[in-house]
Length: 65
Image (cartoon, rainbow, N blue to C red; front, side):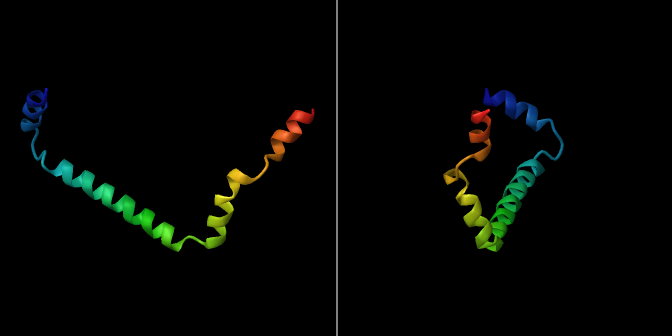
């Protein structure tokens, strides 16, 4: 199986650039995500972390109809 993939990839010009591009995209994504986590407001993090613990008032209103 691998020899078919390797054979096809050898015929593509400048194929060695694709792993570098994917690594760069991966690295940039996690750097941006890390920056967002560090700079996020603590109030927002607290509010979002409590969402699963809150009662769903819409569901309760729908059941009463």
